[in-house]
Image (cartoon, rainbow, N blue to C red; front, side):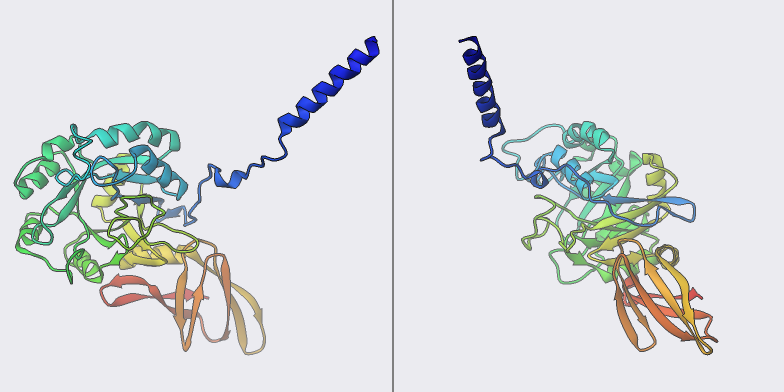
Length: 368
């Protein structure tokens, strides 16, 4: 009898163990994985580290539809190092539900940013009639509440008095072309605009790139995201331009270190590049240095008259190369073999997806 009781207990335990395994419930962890998609670019250029940022985003504390925490999580998952939450001061579609301190979205996001290792920049968007006055992001502000004034110029002055960096947002959004109106011209005259978006959400503004050169402005590429960063329904601010594999618009910042002070110094010193949907735009020399760091050349083979060279692209920036009569898209993690006469010591390339001015792409030479 004793043995029968023992066997019964063992049988019951075995059945319970089988039930605990629940073979009819199978988890697929890839749908819930907490992983980050790294964006591989050169770690250093001319002694400066490279940081990837989005300096124009929104939450449900203005007219966005996600929480500040989610905005930070998205930044981490899509490979960013730097994020600014720039909720509108004047335009708040959620005013019925959310009111009060204009610093709230930043304050709520700070803890998650620290946990994720994201450098969170405090900012806000000064939103006035487009295009007569335009929209401006004030970055590195101390108190967004002090920007809540009726006069748009006074709002920008209040931001600058706090040491803010002022960015002119989407200069051609909702209008047919880029144009400087009297209000912006006055701001330029008084050196109250420090940067400009050459790309916003799904829009590229080549004329803004020209203004950046003429007026010594720092270039930016930002998502202006309002819903999830992964959404893209063709509405301004709803999501952002989606490519495969997915890369959000971002501003590449060349800073001395990962501190906010260093990032701010880099912005005021114009050490940024705009990256969007496989394109680059910005200062010619900075683009030249960056592209030379991305591409490497090695000798593969030779005969009596010719040498074969291999161009490697080991980073996540594609390059549309034009040389001689040939044109090749050199995608990330791809290489290109080129056969040249022995007398050739430099290879001249036109990078047709790298913009240095309104109607000009980058031309450079690779030493062989």
